[in-house]
Structure formats: C-alpha cells, structure tokens
Image (cartoon, rainbow, N blue to C red):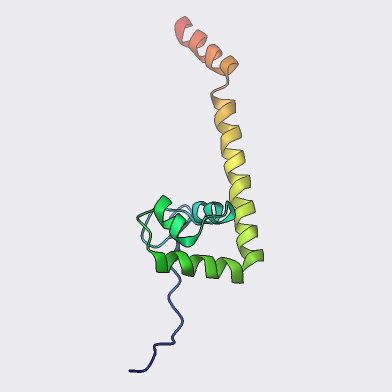
Length: 108
C-alpha cells in the first residue's frame, strides 16, 4: 500500500473574535505555545489539554516552528490586546470609581 504523503490539514482556526484556536476546541494557540515554551512535550500538552489530539498538537508545533516570525507577531499582538483589556477593566473597577458610582446611586 502506498504511503499518503499529502500535507496534513492545519488544525488552527480563527474564531469570531480573531483568536486562533486549535481544532474544534476552545484551546488557544497561545495556550499550546506557552506549554511548549515551558518545556512540555506534545504528550505533556495533551495531558494539559485532553480535548486536543496528539496529531493536532504536533501539526500546531510544526506550523509554529516553520512560521516563528508570524507566530511571534500574533502572540505579541495578542498580549498587547490582553494588556489593554486588563487596563480598561482595572480603570472601570478602580476603588475610587466604584466609590464614586456608589455615592452617585445613593444620592439618587
């Protein structure tokens, strides 16, 4: 029987918010790459994220290793967006703003 040497389908997809997820799961590319950077093997990543499959993890890591600049750029943008979202959340829920909103409600 001949070997199937076609290129495997990349298990990455962009969700409605622009977040890259692995396969049909909610696991993000960032999560898989963070585990990999921490020294996890593909099998270790599978233990952390059992909704993934080993072939998809290997394909994701192969894509990452072949597209380092593109992946790093995406990761940097994702971190910056996360930082901006956290800063907005902190500003909205800062103790002084919360106290001011409570006082305003009490006056009504």
